[in-house]
Image (cartoon, rainbow, N blue to C red; front, side, top):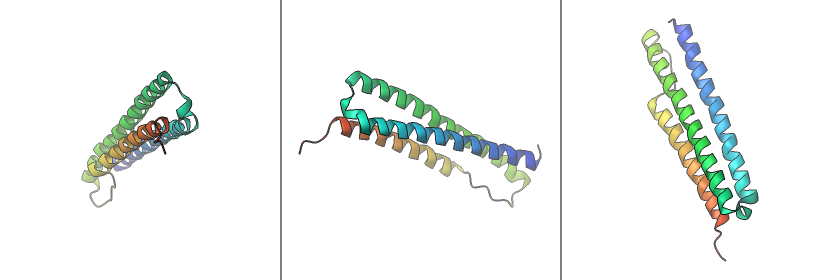
Length: 122
Protein backbone atom coordinates (compact mmCIF):
# COMPACT_ATOMS: atom_id res chain seq x y z
CA UNK A 1 0.00 0.00 0.00
CA UNK A 2 1.09 3.53 -0.61
CA UNK A 3 1.67 6.10 2.09
CA UNK A 4 -1.50 7.97 1.09
CA UNK A 5 -3.63 4.82 1.31
CA UNK A 6 -2.25 3.96 4.72
CA UNK A 7 -2.86 7.52 5.94
CA UNK A 8 -6.44 7.33 4.73
CA UNK A 9 -6.95 4.04 6.58
CA UNK A 10 -5.42 5.52 9.74
CA UNK A 11 -7.72 8.54 9.54
CA UNK A 12 -10.70 6.26 8.92
CA UNK A 13 -9.87 4.21 12.02
CA UNK A 14 -9.51 7.41 14.08
CA UNK A 15 -12.82 8.74 12.70
CA UNK A 16 -14.58 5.50 13.58
CA UNK A 17 -13.13 5.64 17.11
CA UNK A 18 -14.41 9.21 17.44
CA UNK A 19 -17.89 8.16 16.28
CA UNK A 20 -17.98 5.28 18.74
CA UNK A 21 -16.78 7.63 21.48
CA UNK A 22 -19.62 10.03 20.69
CA UNK A 23 -22.15 7.20 20.93
CA UNK A 24 -20.58 6.09 24.21
CA UNK A 25 -20.81 9.61 25.64
CA UNK A 26 -24.46 9.77 24.55
CA UNK A 27 -25.22 6.50 26.36
CA UNK A 28 -23.43 7.75 29.47
CA UNK A 29 -25.33 11.05 29.36
CA UNK A 30 -28.65 9.26 29.01
CA UNK A 31 -27.85 6.98 31.92
CA UNK A 32 -26.88 9.91 34.13
CA UNK A 33 -30.07 11.75 33.19
CA UNK A 34 -32.21 8.73 34.07
CA UNK A 35 -30.28 8.24 37.32
CA UNK A 36 -30.73 11.85 38.35
CA UNK A 37 -34.33 12.33 37.17
CA UNK A 38 -35.86 9.00 38.14
CA UNK A 39 -33.24 6.91 39.95
CA UNK A 40 -34.84 7.11 43.38
CA UNK A 41 -38.30 6.25 41.97
CA UNK A 42 -37.27 3.15 40.02
CA UNK A 43 -37.97 -0.34 41.29
CA UNK A 44 -35.11 -2.71 41.98
CA UNK A 45 -35.90 -4.73 38.83
CA UNK A 46 -35.91 -1.59 36.71
CA UNK A 47 -32.52 -0.52 38.07
CA UNK A 48 -31.09 -3.98 37.48
CA UNK A 49 -32.32 -3.94 33.87
CA UNK A 50 -31.03 -0.40 33.25
CA UNK A 51 -27.65 -1.26 34.77
CA UNK A 52 -27.33 -4.45 32.69
CA UNK A 53 -28.17 -2.56 29.49
CA UNK A 54 -25.81 0.25 30.48
CA UNK A 55 -22.92 -2.09 31.26
CA UNK A 56 -23.46 -4.12 28.09
CA UNK A 57 -23.65 -1.13 25.77
CA UNK A 58 -20.81 0.83 27.35
CA UNK A 59 -18.58 -2.25 27.44
CA UNK A 60 -19.32 -2.91 23.78
CA UNK A 61 -18.54 0.65 22.71
CA UNK A 62 -15.45 0.90 24.93
CA UNK A 63 -14.19 -2.27 23.23
CA UNK A 64 -15.04 -0.81 19.81
CA UNK A 65 -13.18 2.45 20.50
CA UNK A 66 -10.14 0.57 21.79
CA UNK A 67 -10.17 -1.82 18.82
CA UNK A 68 -10.30 1.06 16.34
CA UNK A 69 -7.33 2.71 18.03
CA UNK A 70 -5.39 -0.57 18.02
CA UNK A 71 -6.08 -0.95 14.29
CA UNK A 72 -4.94 2.65 13.78
CA UNK A 73 -1.73 1.83 15.69
CA UNK A 74 -1.09 -1.16 13.40
CA UNK A 75 -1.52 1.07 10.34
CA UNK A 76 0.67 3.81 11.82
CA UNK A 77 3.40 1.25 12.50
CA UNK A 78 3.45 0.50 8.76
CA UNK A 79 3.41 4.23 7.99
CA UNK A 80 6.45 4.84 10.19
CA UNK A 81 8.43 2.52 7.94
CA UNK A 82 7.44 4.49 4.83
CA UNK A 83 7.71 7.98 6.35
CA UNK A 84 9.64 7.95 9.63
CA UNK A 85 9.95 11.75 9.68
CA UNK A 86 6.18 12.26 10.16
CA UNK A 87 4.53 12.61 13.56
CA UNK A 88 1.90 10.04 14.51
CA UNK A 89 0.20 10.78 17.84
CA UNK A 90 -1.35 7.36 18.42
CA UNK A 91 0.59 5.02 20.72
CA UNK A 92 -0.17 2.28 23.25
CA UNK A 93 -0.16 4.75 26.16
CA UNK A 94 -2.89 6.86 24.52
CA UNK A 95 -4.98 3.78 23.77
CA UNK A 96 -4.66 2.52 27.33
CA UNK A 97 -5.45 5.98 28.68
CA UNK A 98 -8.64 6.24 26.63
CA UNK A 99 -9.81 2.77 27.68
CA UNK A 100 -9.05 3.38 31.37
CA UNK A 101 -10.77 6.78 31.24
CA UNK A 102 -13.96 5.28 29.83
CA UNK A 103 -13.88 2.46 32.41
CA UNK A 104 -13.49 4.96 35.25
CA UNK A 105 -16.36 7.04 33.85
CA UNK A 106 -18.57 3.95 33.64
CA UNK A 107 -17.79 3.02 37.24
CA UNK A 108 -18.43 6.61 38.35
CA UNK A 109 -21.84 6.48 36.65
CA UNK A 110 -22.75 3.30 38.53
CA UNK A 111 -21.60 4.95 41.76
CA UNK A 112 -23.75 7.99 40.95
CA UNK A 113 -26.80 5.75 40.51
CA UNK A 114 -25.99 4.04 43.80
CA UNK A 115 -25.76 7.39 45.60
CA UNK A 116 -29.09 8.53 44.13
CA UNK A 117 -30.76 5.32 45.24
CA UNK A 118 -29.11 5.21 48.68
CA UNK A 119 -28.85 8.81 49.92
CA UNK A 120 -27.11 9.47 53.23
CA UNK A 121 -29.44 10.40 56.04
CA UNK A 122 -28.86 13.93 57.30
